[in-house]
Image (cartoon, rainbow, N blue to C red; front, side, top):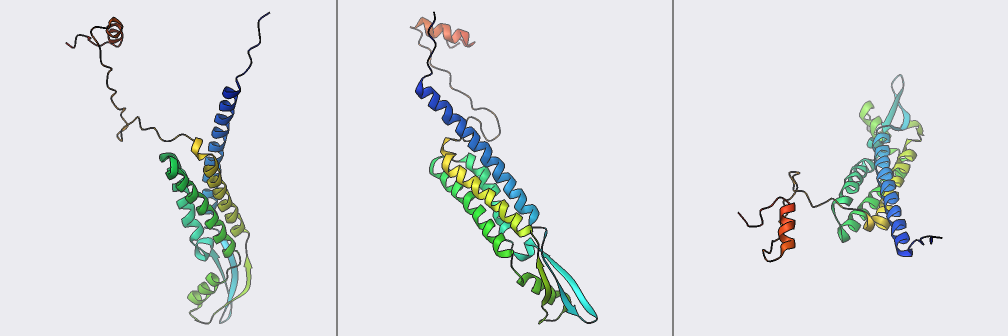
Length: 212
């Protein structure tokens, strides 16, 4: 009766760590890209609506998220850049970029939260469209888009937290290739003519061991 092989504890722990790293990497990429896309898309939606009094009636007005607060859009772009840069650096550089990713998400979420109750952008639109420097908005309402933007910022923040927690285990861009995409030439090992095994290995590689 043959013995059943027992898994080595170190090998099992190493495999579990590798699986965790792959899952956290995939999750961070997905959450970061999704969060940035949500912020960029929803910032162009209507965040606030109202009416301005003009001669002969009321003028309906609305403002988008980028009109209310441009911070979430700018930080979403920064977050996307940081998400890509995470794989170009190692060590302390990776931790710094991961922190930037997390801060970008937090800033975008805070900007969206503050914009959810803003009325200054709509008042400015009333002044611009009516020509009255004292014009204000009546029947002011806010939409749900700022809160959707907030969720997008939270997703970017979560991607940054994953990068800070597990980024040290993620792979980095390979340095095997030059900038033009061609592989670097590898130096052939030296052949000792006094060692027959070196001569045979050189012949197997298609080299001339005599140097001719």
